Image (tube, rainbow, N blue to C red; front, side):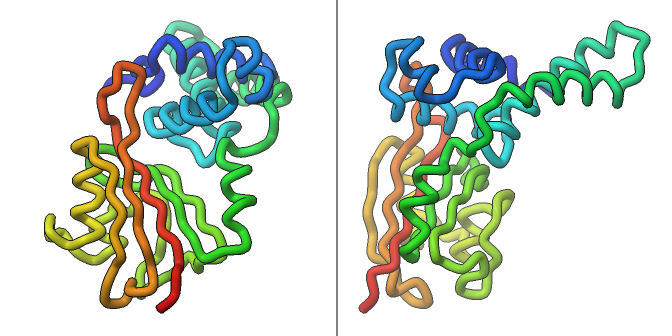
Length: 208
């Protein structure tokens, strides 16, 4: 199985390196002459590839993977070396998730935002006031859009919206049945070469 970090683009790898050096997202944006929003988009792509519950966890995974590789050619204690490297570098990191500002904005409204891969498996999930268990389904990372909306029918509106996003089309739909008070927007996530690597779903409670 290929290493997730080997799939990082040069720019994504550069952003991870700067995070390991202790730069905040704002500082990374200044150093690379990018908008902060662009840096946050890069973190979204990185997290889809590497995993992790937030920026710190994602970088920790990269650090741990490096340690594991080093161990393959070194006769040292695995647990001690991984902990040493992780502790040293994590102390430099800005301790906030890449979606912290989004979470703050969502805290007072019934909304949810998630990012999926090409199989519509949810890798990132940010709930506002919406409960984590909704319409009889536990909303959590690892679930697929099919499980969340309880349908594998490609014509079912929320599924169709996500599938359209994977083809590059941004779609907004008013949902029905048990989700009838919700509006869903699905949009594609592209990598640096403009290839689609997943999609983002944004669901808002709008009432009757």
